[in-house]
Image 1 (cartoon, rainbow, N blue to C red):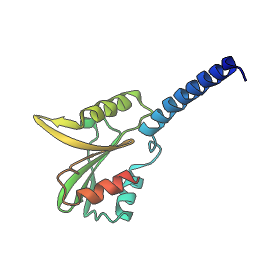
Image 2 (cartoon, one colour):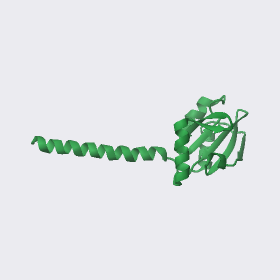
Image 3 (spheres, helix red, strand yellow):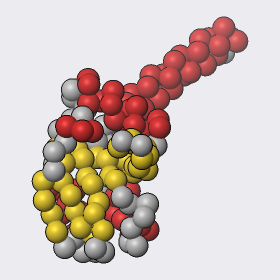
Image 4 (cartoon, rainbow, N blue to C red):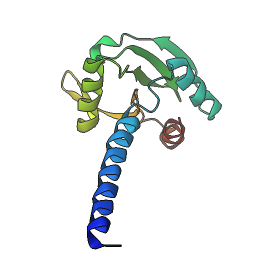
Length: 138
């Protein structure tokens, strides 16, 4: 085998790896975009998270598609679903992800993001570790 053929194979392998990484990176952002808010809530419940109250909230302040307030351990958790098929929602979620928080008036609230789902209030919840484990496994 000549070095020329080896060099071409190596360049082709690098190109293939680059293509795979680009597509994998895109999939990581939207790996659960097809999943519903109800599926996320049911997953939390089946993961042992006791939700004592659930009610819809307006998603517009965070530019999301859907929003619900969950009460866990007598504290509210905001859960928002973004539809990443819409460029505005995709851009907004990416912006928030880069910051690591959302701003409400003068307060910066830390967020937890898994794919298309954004959570508020997890950091201060007594069940933080259980919540993070459940969110991560969705």
